[in-house]
Length: 395
Ligand code: GDP
Image 1 (cartoon, rainbow, N blue to C red):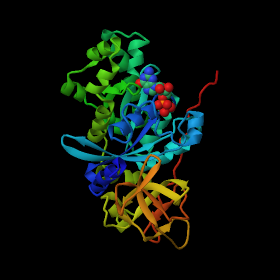
Image 2: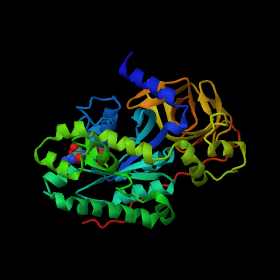
Image 3: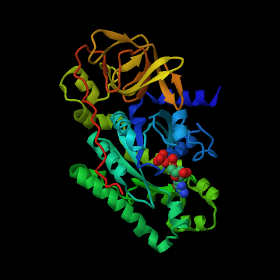
Image 4: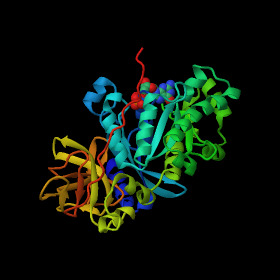
């Protein structure tokens, strides 16, 4: 059996255990390392060679993206991560970092419950950091922070051991100020980023290592040791001792909500229908046996399968042959195939239960933003509104 196929099997066994699912997006200002970080997570999940993580830019599989050297197409990937002997399914959506593609970030945020915000340790929070954070908070998506390029702080900026905490603290404070300014209530309710709690990790996506306070306790490697390894040029050794994907995925599992936890609140933000209706109740409890409520965040043409619609399933279960209503259209569309996406490949599965990110064919009337339901008159999800860039002075 191929490696991909094996991963697909593990993915499918976790799909109907929503408490073990995390739907996440990685968001960042351009060039802060979102793609390189995504590669690390894929490498950790065994989907690409770890040696290539950071060099392969796996998420950038679109030739147009490769030609431009930027990520323009939100790709969805499912992977399995183990924490304390338990397996979790992490559905990751890659989001574009370029300003022109802001609409895609918005769409991706609708499908996820949590976001890993990547900030370059040297540059700090930048205008698009603010934009993506605002979009996440507006959609009720909870953030954790990855402070990237710490290797540059040490080797290029020559920041000394004694100054590390203060320098990194400044980066964190600025991100926290943004969150506080955007949503004071959530900030006070525990969404504040706090290294001591563990919802921040620090590392180098290029060299595949990262630490967080919980990881420091487990591995004995803290900032002083990291500085030593960097000075001695022992990046590979450091990556073996404190692999990035463990620090980040552990943080995702621990601090970002499962669909069960998230949907209780998020449904109220993104849907304004009747909570007491069968579909309202099913979405609030992420019920796989309730009516289908599926929100499309991406439609892509596959050379073999035709139009593939990807989105978040908030309630019900998707199966081949189902007849579903598409908001804004009369009549139904029949689902032909149901699958999950792993980079450029779509892997077919028998059925997809509530709480997952699903890729289906056959929904010929679906467009980005469509609400798909087994109920004829389901109130559609709120329109996806894009928050534009803050005004910048162009030099
Ligand atoms: P994205 O635009 O946010 O997806 O950024 P990329 O992942 O494409 O990274 C932008 C550039 O920064 C690339 O040249 C990467 O090799 C480099 N880069 C990413 N992470 C790190 C890091 O941790 N350290 C250093 N020194 N460079 C990095």
